[in-house]
Every structure is written in C-alpha cells, then in structure tokens.
Image 1 (cartoon, helix red, strand yellow):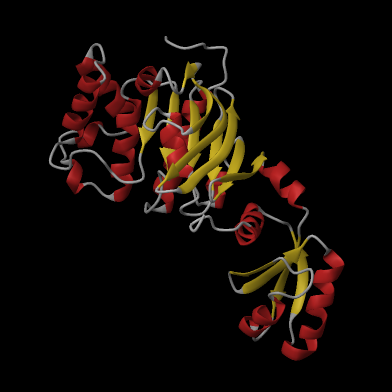
Image 2 (cartoon, rainbow, N blue to C red):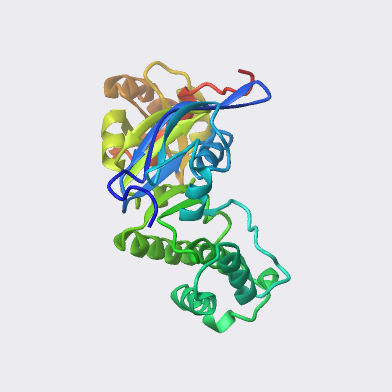
Length: 312
C-alpha cells in the first residue's frame, strides 16, 4: 500500500484556485482523519467540486499545499489518483455497456489483479449480481448510483470522494447508500461527501461548510449548532407569508424560513426576536414556540450572511 498510513487522509492548507480571474477556492484548509465520514456542505457554486478535484489530483492548486493519503498534492498527483475513488455529480459510465462490462472496463483501467474475481466480488457487495447483464443506460437513478459507487470501489481505494452522490434518487435509495457508506467507514475507508441534504450531513462524523470559495465553519454537527448560538421559534397563524415579510430585516431577526406548515424565525438575540414577533400577534394572530436549532437553520443563516464572489 502506497502512502504514509499514519498520516491523515487529507491534510491541506491554503488551497486557492481561480478561473477567468474569479477566485473559486480561497485559502481553504482541511484535515480529515482516516476512517471518518466528512461532510462537505455549501451552496451551488461555492467551490466544493473544485476543491474535491484538487484533492484527488485532477486539478493543480494555484496556491497552497498539503497531502492526500500521505502523498503530496502537487508532486504525487498520479499516485493519489490510483488510491482514490471519485464519484462525480453526473453519471459518467458507459450507458450502452452492461453493469458487468462497465466494472470490467474500470478494473482494466486500474490494472486490478484477478479482475474477473474482483468484478464478481464488487457486484455481490453492492447487490448488483442479478442485474450484471443489464445495460447501464436502462437503470433507474438509484441503481445508477449503486453502479457508480461500485465503479469507485473496484480498485480498492483508501479514500472515497463523493460529489453530491444522492442527488435525484429516492429516499430508500439514499438510505441504502448511506448504510453502505457507514459500513465502508467502519472497515477503515475514509469518505469525503458533498451533499445538500441535512439528514445526510447529520450522519457524518464531522462537517465543513464552504461558501463562495471560503471555509465558513467546521466541526461536528453538534458543535456547529452550538457555536451558531441561534434561538429559533416555530410560528403558526393564518397569514404566515405576510408575517414573514414583516419579520425579514427587523432588528435581531437573522433567519426567516418556511418550515412545513409553519414559519421558523430566529437569531442570536432571543429577546430581540421575541420583540419583533410581539406586534404580529395582534396583526396576524400568530403564536410561537421555541424549537431546537438544527443544521438547516444554521446553514441557511450562513448562506444569507456570506457574500457571493461571482463578481470578485
């Protein structure tokens, strides 16, 4: 096995990348211990995919340094690629080939020894054996996702980089996928996964939130929620749309979002939020109760407070 097994799976500092004069990733640092599931969150266009591509050796940073699996990002990119499984946002396998043919091709590219046996093992571990002759293009979203994961695992990588792997698949397929990810981590695999789903974020051992190229916060879900210091209220009433319009921009109100059939509003100053809601009781007949702060509250607030770098 190549690389220093004692080193963190990912240890990078100051990564920076620009395209057409726009800084897409700006002084990004991250450390991920082996055998952990690390969630990578942020709005679209925040630099997550660019960061992932730098970590696996597909892009060279403009600035910064670090290692992936104990290998230098700049000088050992080819060696990194051989030890990483990278699942892109879009299905990128050959749709006119069968599941088995796709896996055999990927195994050939990676020069996997005892290729036929390894393909059989991978088919079995992902529950694909019964569909091995089915053309990839005829698979549903959930089965395509499973095949893409199998292709990432065929060469027995040490690190999985998963770029929004469950986008567009049904809830059961998402749950099955995450059960498998936890099994892999329990066996020593390190996983970095970007996602927009807060229930998936909560299943990660630790999280990093990147917005428009910059690292905003990191830690466990509990740590991030605690450090945000938000008090959130669930508001009910007849005209929540009007109540939300009144609340937005009022002193102390940092968060106003529809949440099911209710409205959630909050801020770091509880008394200020309560003062803002007070007049709306008579105006709209609303009532409110405090509710636990969750990751969705925190990340929506972070998105609202972070300036877009598109024109930078």
